[in-house]
Image (cartoon, rainbow, N blue to C red; front, side, top):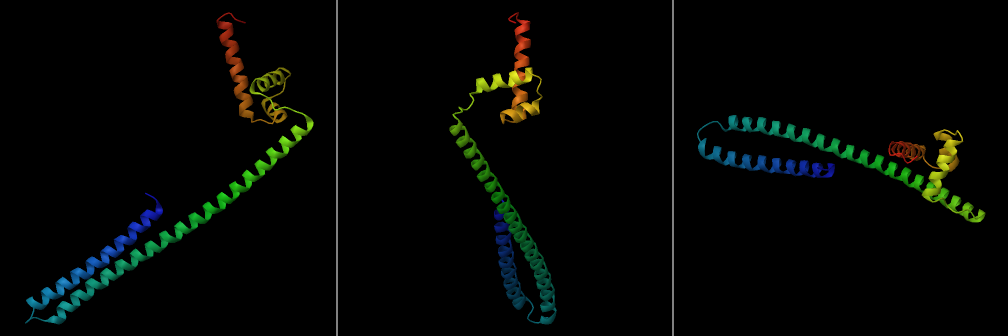
Length: 166
């Protein structure tokens, strides 16, 4: 359940509790009026005053909880807005970098690597003794991609040796 739904549920609960208290009060006052014509009306009023004081105290506590939830939701929304702004700025930077690299590649007549030739370059650089990080930096790709390609090459070599293909 989302926090706004919870907050709405709490608000409706508060309104429902207030309505129930009023209905009970009216019912009890009418009942006492008919039942206690000869008895002390002051005692009855004191009982109701204590009941209403307790009900008011609970309503105030509930109100404080609602306000705390409201402030918490506001803080979370503000933090989310900041994070979204940061992500948007990062995406704009990435787009700018991609555009500048694409423009540089187009100006130099360079064609982007296909996955096959990129895999061959990874394997060739590894054969020359470069480590994962150096290969990733040279080819501007994630080191995990380099690791995956080299791992797959190793597995394929092992399978080829088992089947007598190599």
